Image (cartoon, rainbow, N blue to C red; front, side, top):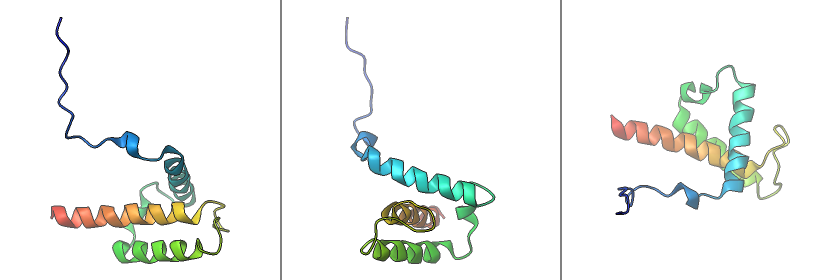
Length: 97
């Protein structure tokens, strides 16, 4: 019997992502989904790319002084990662056009 074949050597290995950090990012995403009227509300923000870059900077800088965001009770750096993911989404969408 021969071994099966799977052509996936050129695919990203998502097991390289740090699970515990991703859980914190998912908590921020859930917080936003609960706070705003629709879970993908972030896609409809005016001037989104610039605003998420600015929000990332605010959370990143605040993380120098404190780990936890006082409003959400979640990590500032997890908020910053979400902002980066959103900003990257808009950059990739712009590239597709």
